[in-house]
Length: 124
Image (tube, rainbow, N blue to C red):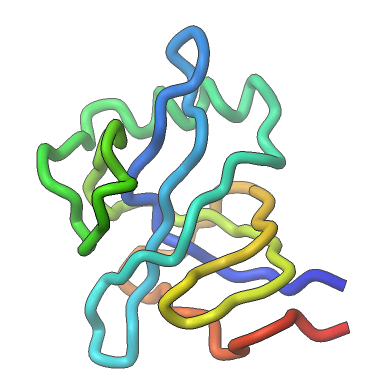
């Protein structure tokens, strides 16, 4: 069984034909700081990738809204405005989500999205 969590979209690697490729996700820690949660590149239809590209257009920023390492070059960063739901197999603080899959956009405000509480393997 896979757990699910909400995540704030903070960036994306470009996909084909102007579509969104892999999303970069974040969540708020206990201190309220936005921190990197991980990436998700599966679970999207072509239509969903195009919809996300249209939705995120105009929210681009030049600097990442979260602290990131050098492996994040080539990411288009966005204002932390939109929230999505992802399923995942494991979450480890400092390492992020493992085996994440996109489930869809959510209507919750980005300010209320917190890190998953269950470190380690998802229940089940």
